[in-house]
Image (cartoon, rainbow, N blue to C red):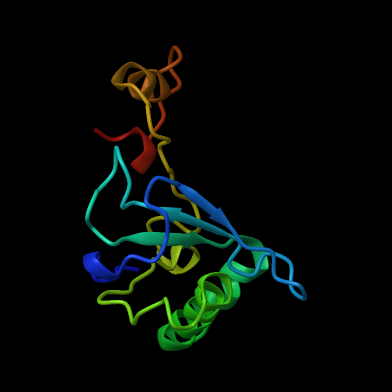
Amino acid sequence: MQFPPDQVFWDTDTQFFLYADPLERGYYPVFQSLDGPGFLPGSGIMFVTVVQDQSYRAEAQDEEITKQQILQVLRNMYGPENVPVPTAFMFPKWSLEPWTFGSYSNWPQGTTLEQHQNLRANLGRLYFAGEATST
């Protein structure tokens, strides 16, 4: 989700933000800022990760409902007056995509080209394929 760059409400020097819902485990628990050093400074972009049952729930419901649920969590964390309407919102539906069926890779900051090449290197006659091994 992307917010106006002049209305960023989180500390852009902090990469991860955690939320513990008092009633439902895994309800939008991990937010990551891409607006910080080493990523996309000034972008106003952050994303949230959900897994297991929560990811299937989010995929099955209307995108507007998902967006409003995420905004409510952010407003609980930062105050309703501090969280503006996002200028962009999207999320992949990994388990519904025929080319992924639920898998994806997320390269951590600092991953080297050598590490990426090692991941896709064959082991004898065993070759690896997929989006994580492409260049």
